[in-house]
Length: 320
Image: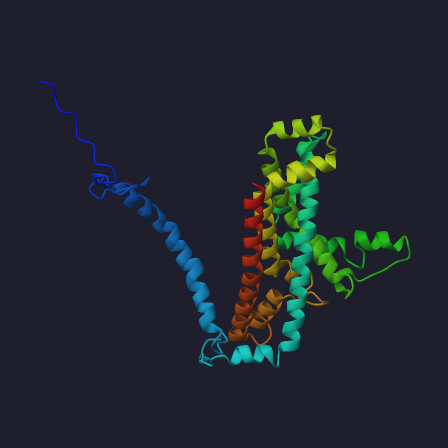
């Protein structure tokens, strides 16, 4: 006997519901795999909690006290008194520090990334001795801040350093890091010199990931070196631009160690990070006020980094 074909639903009748899958969850990690994934994240989360979240929360709390860090002197809760002090009594110094910080960070971010792009483009072209130049450019990145500071302090020593001896040939003299005119530009130069190697490395990695066929097609179409860089290389390394610009901006906003070695915050180099360090650990040792300046620096960094990141991410999505 021939089996009957299943009856088709009448026109306009709703289709029968599809059988449910018993509530099975979809995803890459399930069951024990998901538990193992979360368990493997615990060490990193614990380290971040201890070294990141807890100190940040402690800084916010200390900024509301008159804590000095001196044993035997109690810390009293003073509320927003330190913030009021920063915006009233100490405001001229705080304002100058903010200006110095923004000038320093802007110059470092722009110049460092422009130079790194040019150097990376030259190294990508496989010029003779490219391995030597790569090592030479990356060398400062492996040196400590103290070594870098002492090295350039000796080079720009106004009493008998190589730079001073060179300028004497033209009957010119300057105090270099002791000059109100040259201290900030020279600190910016040293900061760029010390960070250029890593920035170049990121750009070079992005350029090497660009398909060679794109460059070949652009050359066959008669594109000049500038047009190939402008319309092929630079758009294709948008993720590298995002990484380098953000790292340079955030890093230069928070720098204080190099400035401490070179100028100790004098001669228009008293950035907010340097002002915070001096307030907390030198002179009166007012850790409460230093923590307040730290929270202000955190706010400025956040106000710069978040819009910048959003813009760069949108640029990536638009180009790629």
